[in-house]
Length: 182
Image (cartoon, rainbow, N blue to C red):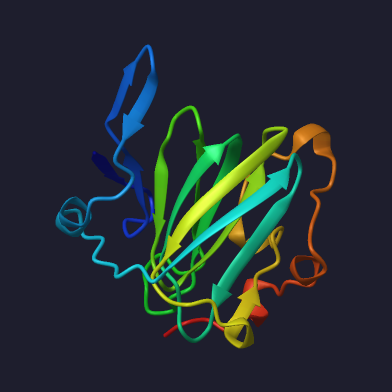
């Protein structure tokens, strides 16, 4: 596995070693000792799996209490995956980073606790899987507004059409008005 720190050093792009032969492929998606050595010392307690169609944008989600670290990967299709630093004490507070994750590149993204997370579906359909370091707690969940200009996220929106959002995500708050972490 190759672990590469992004422009937000706590967000890490992971590229597993893939073994391909005429039968298909094999890869390790998680190996605790390697992740710990790379600085990802999470105790994963929950796995999630979502399916979405082209143009769906999920996020930007975070939990103000019980913050979740997320190890994100794509089993089918392609997404533009985004992390936003919400730690006020961080030198990268309010900054974002994005990466294309797909079933073809098999890359994963580590989004640590203290970050908002979201993704935009670029393929006809995408299945996203992620491990979480804490349990989902809807009472603490918050959403940043996906298109807040302060975040400077360059979403690869297809044909300039507005993304498909949940009602909750459409009502997301601006960074300047959001609850964040110390």
